Image 1 (cartoon, rainbow, N blue to C red):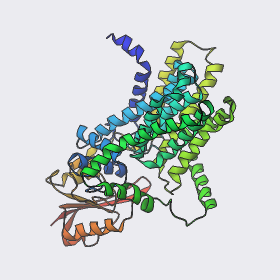
Image 2 (image 1 turned 135 degrees about the horizontal axis):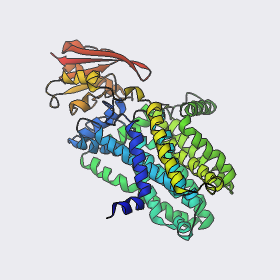
Image 3 (image 1 turned 135 degrees about the vertical axis):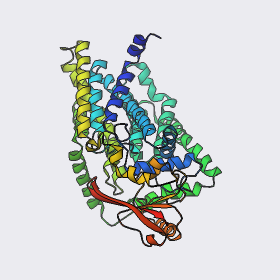
Image 4 (image 1 turned 90 degrees about the vertical axis):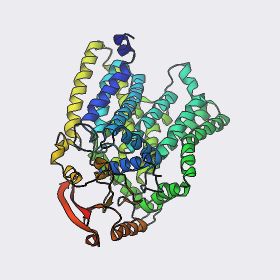
Length: 503
C-alpha cells in the first residue's frame, strides 16, 4: 500500500495517536522518561494483575477492591513487561488515542477536519496534564474511550446530519455496544455508572419522541443484554474457582459499606449537597485546564441549541456523573477523571463558532495544519511543566530509594514480601515478586480482618521481607531485623518506609 495514500486516508487516527503519545510521554509516570511509576494505587493494580497471570484468583487469594477488568488489563501489561510499567504505558497511549479519536469525530461533526486537528492537542493537554490525571494509570483513565464513544453516539442522536444518522436511533446494535461498554466500565469501577444512567435517560426521551414507548422497551433489552455480556466471562471465572462470594464481598459489599460513606446518615441532605458544591468549587480551581472547556459546553449549549432538552442535556449528564462519583464522600484528585469527557462538547461548540465566524475568512488548509503542529508543540511543553510529575521527569533510577531497597531483597522474584501500613509501594513490581498473602498490602478499606491477618503474618514470620509505611509494626523485631529505611516529602505528605528481613 502506498504510504502517502495510507497516511492521507487515516490522517485523523494518526494525528490522534501522535498527540496521545507525545502528551502522555511527558505526563504519565508509566512513560520511559520516568524512573518508575511509584504511585501506590497503580502498583497495587499491577500486583493484582500479576497474581492473576500467575494462577492466583483475585479477591479470593489477593485482596483489593477495584474491578476485575482493571486487573486483567494490568495483568496483560505485566505479561508485556514483567518489572516495569512499559506495558501499561502502551495501554495508556491506546486509551488516549481512542479518547481523542472520538473527540475528533464529535468536533469534526460541528466544524471540519482542519478545525478539529487544532483542537485535539488542546484537549489532550487539558486532560492529561491536569491535577485530576495525577501520575498516570488510574482506573478511570482507561474508561475514557468508552465515555467518549458514548458521547459521540449521543451527539449523533441529538444532531443527525443525514438520513443514515437519523436512523441510528433505531439501530439495536448501537444500544448493545453501549451496553457492553457500560458493563466493562462497571467491572472496572462502578462509580462511573451515573454517566451511563444519564445517557440512558436522554436516549429514552429521544426514542419516545420519535418512535414511541414500545421502541424503548426493545432498545432497553439490547442495552441490558450488552451489559450482561462482559459479566458472563467473570461469572464463569469466579464460579469455576469457587470465588463468586469473594467477588461480591470485595467488589460490591465492602466498597459500599466500608470504603464509601454512601450509606452513612451522619449529616443531612442539605449539608451533603453543600459539601458537594464546595468540592465542585475546588475541583474547578484545581483543574482550570479542562473546566474551562466544560463551562464553555454548558454556556454555549444554552445559546447554540434550539430545544430546551438539548440545552441542558450535558448539564444533566455532568450532574449525574458527578453525584454518583462523589456522593459517597471520596475526594481523591483522580476520581474526577471521568468529568474530563465533558471537555468534548465544549470543544465541539467552540469549533462550531469558529467554523461559522473565522474559518470562512481563513480557510487555507496549510495554515490550519501549520497552526495545529505549532499548537501540538506548545501543548506538549505546557503539559510537561503543568503535570504533577514534572519534578520527577528524567530522574535517575540509581538515585531512587526503591532501587536501593530492591537490591537488598536477595532471591527475588522467588522470595516472599509483605507490604504493611500502606498500599503497594512498588517493590512487588520492580523485584518481580508474586505475593503469597491474601492481604499483601494495607488497603484503603479499614477491614478489621485485614489488620488482624497482617499482624498474624508478622507474628508468625510468614514472609522473608516486610516493607512498612508510616510506623514500625507491633512485634516486628520478634522475627525480623531492620535493614533499611527512608523518609522524604512527596505528594504533599511526609513519607517514611522501613524494610525488614527475617532473622
